[in-house]
Amino acid sequence: MVRAKIDKEGLLPFGQFLQLGDSNSKGIESCCTPFSTKTSGFNESPRQNLITFKNILWVESTGGSNNEVEISYAREKNSKLVPASQIFQIEFANPEEQRQYSSTELTSLLMSKAYPDSQPQKSVLVVMNPHSGQGKAERFYHGQVEPILKAARYDIELCKTQYSGHAVELARDLNIDKYDIIICASGDGIPHEIINGLYEREDKAAAFNKLVICQTPSGSGNAMSLSCLGTLVPSTATLEIIKGHVVKADLMAVCMQDKPVKLSFLSQTYGIIAEADIGTEWIRWIGQSRFELGVAAKVFGRAKYPCSIAVKYITKTKEELNEFYKKAIQSPKPVSEELTDDSFNLKYYRGSQDLADLDDVDMDDGWEWLDQKACDSLGIFYSGKMPYISKDTNFFPAALPNDGSIDIVFMDANMNILKTTDALLSLDKGMHVWKHEIGHYKVEAFRLIPKLGFGKTSYISVDGENFPFMPFQTEVLRGIMKTIMTDGSFKETGFLEKI
Image 1 (cartoon, rainbow, N blue to C red):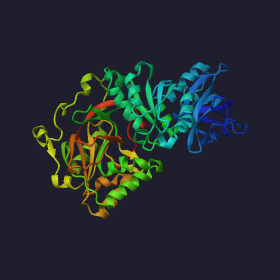
Image 2: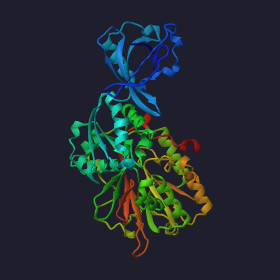
Image 3: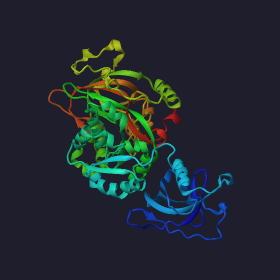
Image 4: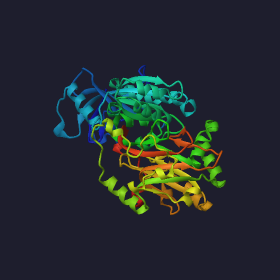
């Protein structure tokens, strides 16, 4: 047993609190903790031993003396988090708080401090793609995710997908009353399937109201975890899921003629990015490098992807976008109302219109066509709702979780090659959108009509998935998906600092 004090940040053990990491049969490390009787004062408890309230996963009564509890918590080991457990005798840094607590009272006190913004002990369905991350997903889950969930006393059910589209079926047929959270132990493909499986349900409003959807990063693309939880480490993502804020995030409805409407949480792209992503699937085994090689080949080859694009602007200029962003981030309007069937009604797609028809777009409703000369030499068209699409790619730095907008980045293939290279080298910090030559807009909806010419084809990528190569229209659906975000917002992008 170890003596410790409670202070404003967490639990501070006395003396030399050495966590030696002896594993027990439960997969939770016991802490061997020698300490000197000479280091008994509050001021002699080294701060590096602090167990923050955020890292406390579970507290339970020992049934022993007062002020005595067993605490399970997450600690860092080899750049990952592992669960550990220790019995503590608790004292208080504030003398006014010092009194004899029963073990049960102390348990309640510490749990309330450990879970100020979330509920403990939830029921979770883990949907794992065992082939994600070059086959590493299973090792990531059992080695990093599951131990943290178990230490937090989560009720866990694991389902491994067996084929493409399996997660769609799971979500469509799920008993939503059994679970609080769906964790996608995968890349970005499984969240895309889960969202669309829920969308296919007759009770989709109830399903999206009930379930929280999040990701522990396990694939080649982990944009949801990086953007929402700020990490690509599965164990850290798990702690953020347990302790983060639930946020109702916007989704996008992607419409194609004579095809079912699909939901998108991340992005849609046409041009160089789509070619580099979908067109290099055959060398997926080399990892992220395949994407970078694909982009470089197309950029230096001056590849062009002619099209026509109509947009329903929210902001048309960089100055308007900056003002919109400042207002939205400084005075956010959180989405709190319950979803109904009407929440999924599409504003701009009637279901039978010819999306290739230029005259079909209602200009009287505020739509505008982008400059056709620029569209004829398009290099990159990228639209999205989350800022980070990969580790070093802050592609949509002005994206916000539920501002009712879609961010668009537009690059002309005729741009000076040095300026193009400079823009691409600025993606890690999101500085590319400040370049004069690059279009950066916020829109409510858009339509893209590819015009490669007879017999030619390319790719349309939605959330990294290959979609039919045909005209499509996308519009935002506000506050549809409940997910978890660290501190209730996306990972910092640095955009506000540049305004």
